[in-house]
Image (tube, rainbow, N blue to C red):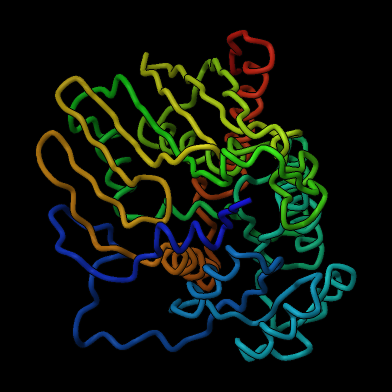
Length: 385
């Protein structure tokens, strides 16, 4: 069976590092420095990556490019990965941990922050353990697999007086900042309808005889306990996010429908595809879909006096955008570098992280995801409180 890994996905969509002509105002953190401005040479945030899967490689690249962060440690359950990363990134032996001795990181002053990149179902455990070790922590999205888990994570970090962030890389991406501005500032009037979709084909539909071990770490996204769900958790969350931050509103009701399962051998515990609709207080409606059975990467919004869109839109880019008034053109950035630099600067200044990337933001997505699953299972509209 042909399989597309997370690495293939990153390679396919690219992680931009180039530059292009700007037609609209850049956010302040992307403006070019003055010629006389010296590179930053001060203290950096020392990061330990917890979980060395494919996305950790993209994060490591972003950390290497970062002005304010450095890769100081790793946490992995695979000895061969530990040896490879130790050599590749010149990581001291004392900064290398496995999942059993991880708690000893509390005695390591060389580590300031743990970035959790393990499967979704393990996020809570490692965030809480990081907090108890006195380390600030970033966890990849989705924040966790349940609202209760999110609440426990937030409490643990508050109790330990450490900061918790969720890896919302698009919150610092210039095209998405522009989408947010266009929507929330009503540049084209009130947004009435949003269409958002993110999915990619991860199997050969003609291969119906293959079986997979859903308990293997390689296939953890097919394991409900480890993943919390199918593509809605992993990819659809970007559709939820984009609708929420473009409108600046929280959904008040959802309806949802599971898609057809074309590969019954793989999708035993989680959905292959799901479509859902969100209603917002302003009257706006968002229609979204996500899948591991087909490719889609699109965002479109129509308002009273115009429209705006991206395609590709929600992946790693490079993004292509336009509005009813013309083409959108921003620099391509290293999304991970930019995200980490913005978080790193605030931590170095002992400032509070903004609400839009904290646990309070992450738990909102999980509440919506839970409602979508409930609606798809019951066939009924679910009202969100």
